[in-house]
Length: 90
Image 1: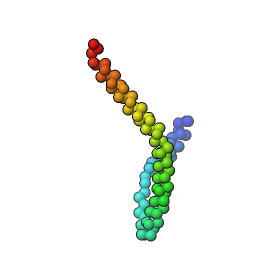
Image 2: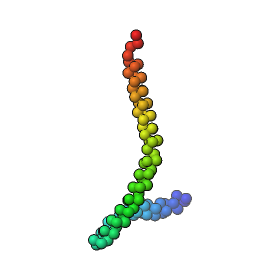
Image 3: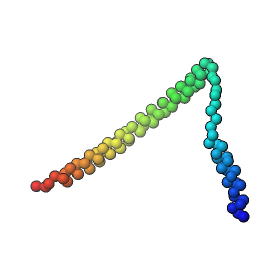
Image 4: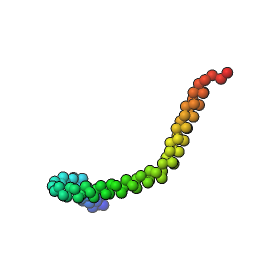
């Protein structure tokens, strides 16, 4: 009996889920003035994001550089040890 009451709920949820995946393609015609206005708004938003992203990159540059340098040095040291282990000792 308990499963019988869950079944209709599952059917409803499945119907809602499957209908939410469909996308309707909107065909909107913008005038030249509207396109210019939208482009101007987008450019302002992008320009403000560029400033934030640049400052974030500058603040993380040295730590990222040091991590990369440490990683490169570690790999080189491991390669050197492998090569040295192949050389017969005299």
